[in-house]
Length: 185
Image: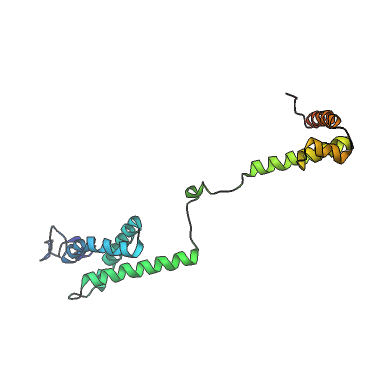
């Protein structure tokens, strides 16, 4: 560890100007932390990302402190490091694409695959059962249950009495239920 980081010089004594065993560089860096975090907040607009950016900036500054020129402004140098790290992070996100936690989107509207499959199987079963029914029952079920005709309209279209429509419809429904394996209630 360098003398500036350890807070001691070659003789084992703290360097002049250091506070609490820290080098002057580290002391000034610690003093800049609140400003650095505020600056990171303006870049990221997120408290957690700002903390991460401030920490990464401090790490980079400590690793590269030999490149810091005495007599220049540490805050400007540190903020440049933060800005460059932030730009690098933005570029990386653009290259990689945006990722989001899937748990955050569990409430997205969509279809339940099991339900869609069950409906498709049910429709297929009903179509097969209808195909096996007598033509008069199938036509009556289609008129009343699918097209929404009234008993009177079905009676007129099929040219049969309304009583016959009701009894034939009852037998057709029972026959369909039996073919589908449904019990009568």
